Image (cartoon, rainbow, N blue to C red; front, top):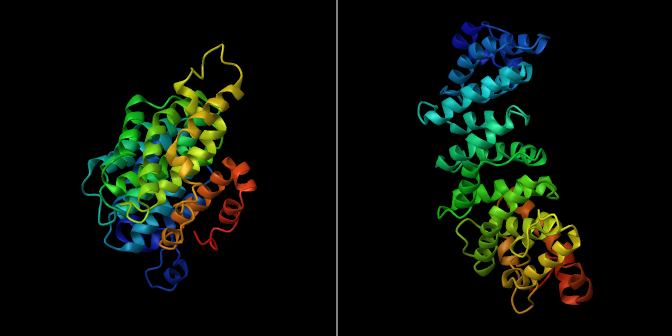
Length: 351
């Protein structure tokens, strides 16, 4: 099996071209992947370690198809591994990624393997502790979002289980969300934003702690894009993320009120009081209020901004931001004709 992966990975690896392989004279019917699919027992740590060696070698191949198919075999292997085997796979993957060299011609392949690792009590704490620092060191614009995205389900699991986010990770997230390099800033803003959006309401101490830590960073992103949406260095998406999260999950949970009183104070039992503190903070936030200003077009519904969007992520966050804004300012949107027209039909609004 190991020799098959070494000598003819194009046949022994899983892939979309299996039928083509069957017509060749050197046919080896995806022997490795088909064996593991048919094998009904968990793979031990030793087996996982042995099979990871040729998988990582294939990930470094000059052949793009072999590189891509190595991800599929990694997924099959991890799916059959015991919990200890999964931990071993993550450990070995981290070692290779942290080495920073000899990764091969396509770092996206290696980083894509992180997304194969499902969230769990064994893997998520390790991912949350180790991978953010790795993301911060990535300079490849194509590979960076791939690695950052792989962290989202693990952060969600971590926060839902009320596991504390390490202090060094909190500091790194805050710093990178305000990084002067646009691609790094965008990656971390999207990472944290996607986590909170998927999380929904902030119902654990861990989630609220993270929310408080990154609040100022989100506020800075919103202000930066709102004041200069056409020339924002990372595009308008970080402003969309900030608006969606601040006026969505954060507003529903009242984490803004932390400057007035302790959310965890035993005497602070009325959650509605915290919401009132929140609304006071929002009412004094000029950037948030400017979203509804009729004196100039809001970056959320300005056609010169949204018509330049180039990918699905940007369009998704725009829709989320409009949803959060329309919900948070529902009274204003309902009662003011101009706002009602803009937020119901942003594509047709002449603002």
